[in-house]
Image (cartoon, rainbow, N blue to C red; front, top):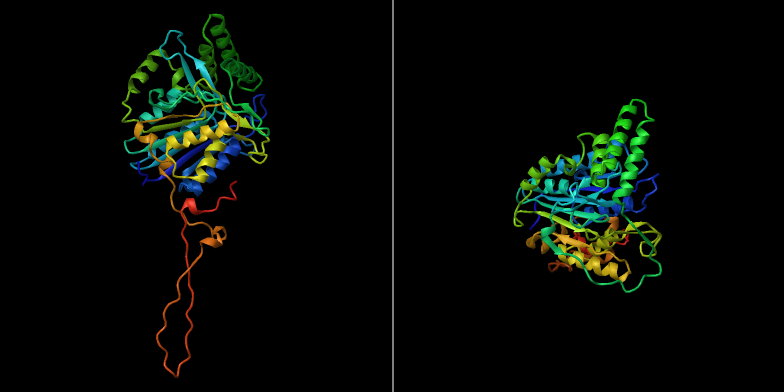
Length: 400
């Protein structure tokens, strides 16, 4: 697909400060990704929504489920033919069992906003379903269990049998996962905390009793999570936690052919896999980053015209060379697999102080007419030509 419309992005980074499952590189990922898409891919500031849980962030810019879904739904709703939409999530991921153990789709992937109100695979598929034809929607998820966040039937690059060739001595990393049971414990803690908030005593008690009842009656952990989230966030919960009859109706509406689906998912790992966070690495010059996001950005800085398939292959090789055990995947239609990432790089005019001297050209000397004998000879002059570089010619030293 050749990108000719507007370019809009929602970039989300969750470090979960002041929690026992805190991360350190997710906000750094977002800042690095924003710089890349502005310099290389023609996104402008007014069309980029950034949501992070940085301590200084205002409430309406926190990466809660409400704020993330509002930004995504607005982006999709306002998109027109030819637009390029981009959603980057860097944070925790989880995998949760079905409410009914005998369901064909036994497990579901989800990303974890800062308020723990999950955004599930069904939520993202519903967004893609609402896209008009001719609009591309690319998702990059640097979170555990992110493979399968959209339609797994369009798996272009899936599980890998390749093994890391030994850990790079300076690469240290941890996983970006949170188990369903740990998530349940956190939600119970939140419910309990509500009892200590003025005006929320009834809510907290109700949630705790509902969750306890669900667990005591033998309900699955998924059922308990659904009860907790519904009790805390009311109707503002994932489609996945709606009553089963409504979910079945939603599944029927999501059955679309692969040729119609413009959704593109570059996942940091497989559905049953985890994503790594690099901490204090020489590779990243001491900054914490998601291994997947960092490798992806570096690959695109070297060649912004990579196709989605080429990009995932390159990132896989980079992680393997560093001894990082995770398997990025690609889920999309055949046509989108061979399409340039985000439609390919765009030309832009760099700031004057960032134009390398080597790119300044001089024109050849102009011929001067034969002077009259009474007039002095005019010297040929050189005129510097203004240089407009494309992204591949620009220097990226400041990004490294």
